[in-house]
Amino acid sequence: MSVRTAKQDGKRFELQVYHQLIKQYPKPQYEIEKDVHLKEVGITVDYLIKNENGIVLAVEAKGGDHPTRKDGGAKRTDNVKKAIASGALYKGMYSSSTFVAYFSFPPNENSDSETSISVALNKKYFDDVVYILPEPENNIEIFLNG
Image (tube, rainbow, N blue to C red):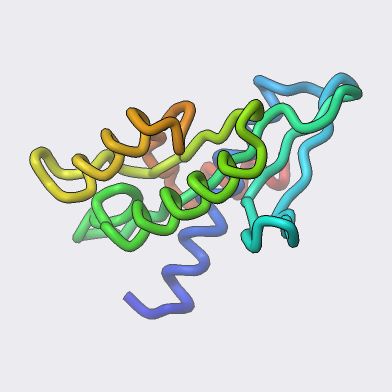
């Protein structure tokens, strides 16, 4: 898969996560910001959800889908390591806020990714991990245009 295709798949997955977030955190109670750079932490989170009291939730979305390999999401240790690093830095600065990692696929059983996610949850780098299988491209197009 080319880098370009991987980025497109990742962007489609981020839209899918956004669609789920707007159902859980509707306007006008909540504001959802995309690609928020947190300079004081040195990271960019995919989504930051706020209400009148401040930050409610930070989200890291790692996903995508290869049509034959099915190796995206938490099956890729690079995705898991980046999400853990972001979660640890974020929770180190904002310990009372919530950090959730969304992955398009769960890790392989007994893999380093599975172990790392378990440790991240245990150490409270993640408050939760959500797995969402990627939707076919045409479903995302309906969402964007519909």
